[in-house]
Length: 595
Image (cartoon, rainbow, N blue to C red; front, side, top):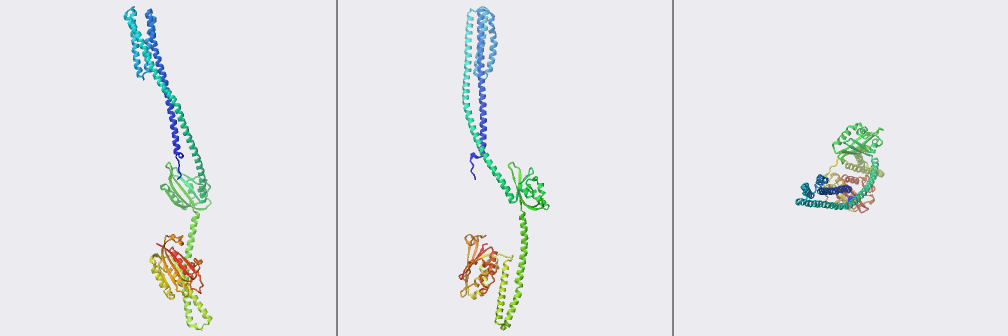
């Protein structure tokens, strides 16, 4: 699996974009906060200015009132009372404005209350001293006390105003320091945040650029794959289609049109348009198969015929499987192949098999007739030869006697050939029953069949104990008989035949001769003799039908015996091999599968 680093993933790009959006929102938040602080600071400055102005107004109004009142005392001119009379209304107006400006400052509200009391005290003192002025009692001790008290109240008002001035300016300085601190920090913070944002955007841009290159490369690969798929469809004679079930929309590949004998995308891809090509005899079956598409996840392989516009009939095979898209919509993707050559090949093969079966039956009948029907005239020939030899034998000339012996020998060989053909024909019969049998018993039965020639040649036969195996009984006994007969027949003159039989159970992968074996375990039976042997180059030839390595005058035989052995071993899905050396002997190795 290809290793994928974090910065190469799409999730990493999403994280960067989200971080960038967060930073932008953060900058917006701080900007809003900074503007709000600036607005608050501006409002504080304006409010402080207004408070100071109103305080100045109060002090100024009271000074004017005091100055006018003193001039009135000195001149007794009522014109000087005008500032005094207007001051009360103006001072009250300023007090109302101050209450609104300092409503959020409890300390200033307390200071304003004190200032209000002092102001009221001042006007009360003006009112009391005015009585003395009207009565011309300004030289009395009581008037001087009130006049002195007026000065004290004015000084107290002035001090209280200064206290409120100082407190307001102090608050203003504190807020200005905070604003200046924020003003100094904000540019640095904005620059840092913008720098980080720029870095993130550069990283995101780089990632997007890399992704675009990868997407372009993938698109190139997809184009190559698409073209390769088109070529594969053309070569493989198949086409693809997709059915969007919910929207009932079909999509056909170009080669599917070609399978129908049409140009790519030459008609609208719909179910009804496709049905126009289906063979009428296959229409019902084809429709039923397609009805199963929506109900089942997979559509079994369905075969049907189509008729192209030029009249050609093609055999098609279709397979489909459903799947769900990322948005949950069900779709069916299918593959349609042109199997015309396969179907025609199968039909041709079936026809050939039928012909071969008929030929085999005819050959079997001919073989049976030839083998059995020839025996009757052959028996008559042998009988007449025997009678002719008994009754007229002494009347033959030497050449006549020689001709008679040749006729007799030919008839005997004909008898052997017919018997061997019958045996070979039996090995080809289909009714072969496999039975679990003791091979030692079958081998003893074969020895009994050959008992006369064994005694005649004084042959020595030794061997290992053979296993119990599942075999066709009469064929395995025939196999043993033929191998014994072969060893006895081709023994050397004036040499006692020695035949050894060895057995072992072997694994196929441990035997050099069993490279292409289909089973894993085999019974290995080896026949070894000390006869005339044969050249190793003839090892395959000796198993061929009617094949002989020796002159028929030297050794009797028809060339069928070993062919029968090969056929019997083949019937048991086994193997037989032969090895020989001239005047040393022959070895036959048999492998029978362990069932």
